[in-house]
Image (cartoon, rainbow, N blue to C red; front, side, top):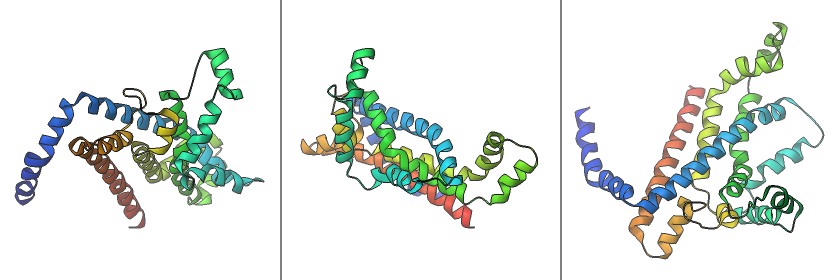
Length: 246
């Protein structure tokens, strides 16, 4: 233990602590990171609420066109984010039905707003939440549900009291993957939200701007934070998978 402290203390003292102090003093940096974290948190929470019932439906139901639905959900994983962002921006446009209706009846414009970016982020991050949940449910033994139904439990009770407790690892993995993906999202946020400080400016866009301005110190701050978050998320996922197969 002493050896670990002896090794880690200089790192924190000479590298991490000064960086954290600089970050705190930089108001623009803190504002951008707050917007990024806010987007990632809201996206993850919304997708968790949507993803659990959707994953259940996909895992335990066979219906016509299921493959097409699954392919559509997973499209953000293979499509360039700018392509998806372009189509979402067209939908938001006041010249289209949805955009025109929102502006006419609710005085709401989704393009270049945090709400619009949030909706786009939910769409873009959906497969990162749904796939781990669906796979976790699909791998559960069928007799779990059958035993619960035999005891008179409803589908809702079985879902919350039997199935979900047995896929805790999948739920944590889905949350970690979704949050980490949202923290690093670039293309779709830039297309739909632009780059407005305090509103739609997120860390990945700020990092790009700082590199273009040759401001490598601030760029390194953004890169360092996103690296740490991604590393922690992947460590959690691999730890969970290791326990499953142990």
